Amino acid sequence: MTKTKISVVIPVFNSSEIIPELVDRLMANFIMLSNYQFELIMVNDGSEDNSWEELKIQKDKFPEYIKIINFTKNYGQHNAILCGFSFCSGDFVITMDDDLQHPPEEISKLIEAQKIKDVDIVYGMYKVKHHSFIRNMGSLFIRKTSEYKKQNEEGGSSFRLIRKNLVDILVQKHAQHFLFLDAALNWYNTNIEVVEVIHENRKKGKTGYSLTKLFNIYINIMYYYSTKPLKVIIFIGLFSSLISFLLGIRFVYNKFIHDVPLGYTSIIVAIMFSTSLILFCLGVIGNYLYKLYQLQQNKPPYSIKNVL
Image 1 (cartoon, rainbow, N blue to C red):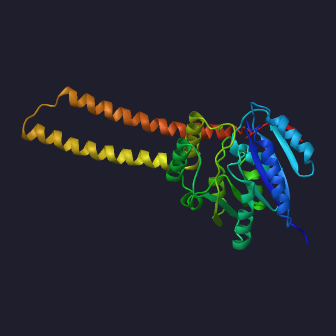
Image 2: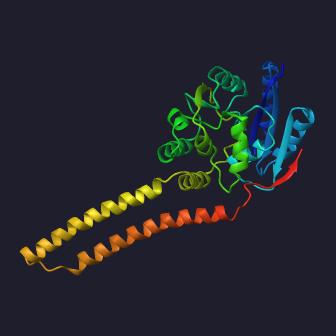
Image 3: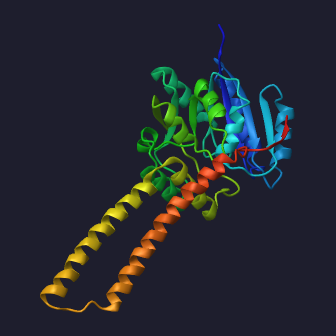
């Protein structure tokens, strides 16, 4: 009987100190799950330390299990995962972080949940998160602003199992400048299960997500995968129209009933207020147009330097 094959995809960024333990624990876990075949695909996302050299060492130790890809520069976690998808040959694909906050020993929970429920996607849910406060707030912001529901409501993560046919669709249809995997997956499938997993503290190094990088990611998610900004514009337009209408009635009433002269101050304030609203709305629309322009340029989501 042919064994089900699992591909594990890990984006790597500045994790040279963690890679040896990560790979050793993964290999030990693969041996424990002897009913399955495994392959490990690790994508070096423009690391500035010795991550690529360390990956080559691990490749030499486990050549039959590991495939490594090296980017020309940093393209982001989701783009690195998309690249890893294109090299997968498994029936299912598991994605996880490189910092050991996703314990390799928890992989079996994702596999078991898929087997029991026969779902297409399984998310690892954390009872207790060990991310920074800023990153947790950012995740909350995404849940409130994005329009994909199931995994957001139940606390999805980058620790996930995906059926191969969905992975193939992402590779074929979503090779674009900015990719947010969870929103793209939700577009094609809502057959999702969530299972509780352990989320450990980061043992070494520091996160690659600076405040600026997180902010840019959240803004891109909002523009590429949500219509909320446009809905805000509609609300602002309706609200300002109502306020303008009520103020207009008041000014007309004061003018004709109490013969109160209309002063320049009120006119200037009204003009400045309406102008600022218009500029704000134009800025939001302009950002959408800029994102469309970026998509039309057909820039590749990543550039590969080496594959071993």
